[in-house]
Length: 517
Image 1 (cartoon, rainbow, N blue to C red):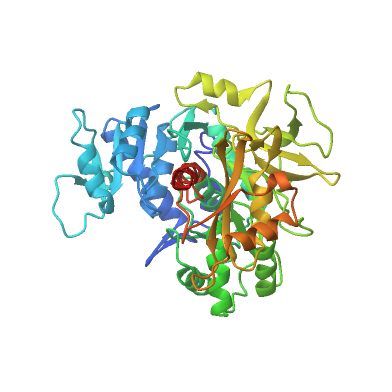
Image 2 (tube, rainbow, N blue to C red; image 1 turned 90 degrees about the vertical axis):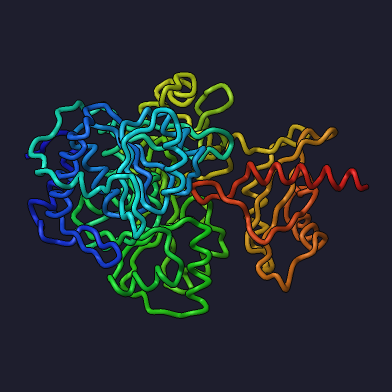
């Protein structure tokens, strides 16, 4: 029988069916479902002993590790709200999140000691417990103290709309927003992910995305545990480390950002390896260029899976089918238990094939932004969640992404979708990756500028080569006015290309060139 909310009883099926089965492998550790549940209940008792009560918020400044998973389940069990912090945060960023959430307790890893030290210099420091103190004595209590209690036998009685999780957006265009998910929306995202990827208890899933974000937590880790599969928990493994883990543990599914997928494929092309157990691979975060699709299929004989999601639904709202035909370049089909419509400028429904804003209805939708009713109202209104993504739906119900509303470049009244230009540039044999941004222009309003990372430092395409390549394939108004080169792109806190920073760099570069000219 279900105990508490569906989120609180997420482990009930594997606990009843296979309690001794390995739930999580991490480095040399292996935790069974029975051990994971018992230690989560013990940690829940420790939280209660620290005065944490229903509705309180617990901040988790942790890498991917079993303690982070246990802390999540402990929060859910006692009705507290888990607040995972991006592990790459520096003091100012971490301080912002702690202040915004009014966290009552902090669990952090020894690696972030210097950051936490600076946090504790504030006038009202909060209780903090460290995971893996290492060899250095320190004033902070070890998390072991929280595991010195009897496992909690009861579960807090909370309604399904009670807040369970606050995930922070990447904040590439401003301060990150706190996206609040209820027990109902968080579990719905997990169950939708289970259905998208067809997870079963036979799956061994390599989780390399940070579980402080929806991609690692809600679409990979939790769905695997829901069905009684096995999680191999890592923290953004290198291609060689990922290959080693796949071979050692017979991994069946692995998801990574599109940029990491490129490195993964390059490694396998240089080091051919038999990965016969791998049955599905997901590229996300940014679109996977067609050329990369081809290279992936040449290696594996099957196609990489793509999808599109957002923190506000904490799963994918559209994804390629796990089996069968996949339309390269599309986001795939609408996710299970999800509705999508395309809206025009006045909020009107647009017909098949016309480009507009993608709006969705899903049980995994956030209940709102933390303490921000204005932004919440802009996101959620008229019964739909407004994604800010521009796209269209074709005759076969595949969803196609055109660009972000905020990223669209308007040149003399004509809309330019950066992704269209980027997809073309990425097919150039000397281009590793590209990002197109809009720069203010007195005559045109905005003009596109392309940043390019060459495939090789020894063979860099010239600006003229790229101009000729694009001009014969795209309408002239879409052609970038300048091509700028970098060895690598700056990234946001979630590992995506930082378009906001690249836009500023492009403005500076063009202004410098104009002053010299």
